[in-house]
Length: 141
Image 1: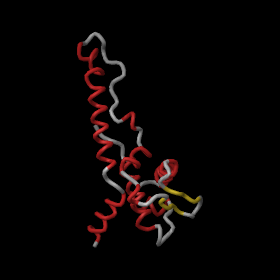
Image 2: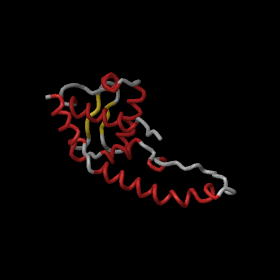
Image 3: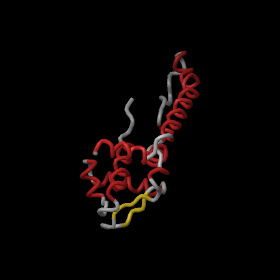
Image 4: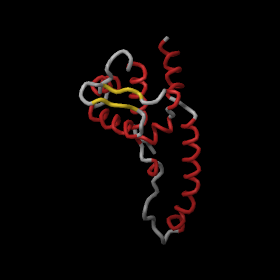
């Protein structure tokens, strides 16, 4: 199973905004050059981050700015802003009811997958954007 690339892109965007917002206007063109994806993807992601209350985005060349301090933005906040959490684990909707496995797969996995998702959300909540900025600073020193 492969997760979407939306969350890592969103983290990349937020790190760039945090690093550069005081020096330059952080535009979708600038961000697309750093992330190396099309500006449309950047603009869509910025829209999701704005809707989640994580960034302010000025139209045109106004640029993006963090709306919260990096220590107050967790990876869980970012994940929930850009990912469809309910689709984290998607079971086959119509398994064969004549098969004992197919008939029982939902009952076997639903609760367990909810527990795994809960653990993952707990782990994401422990890491802040500030943690990543601190790690980035060590790597670029």
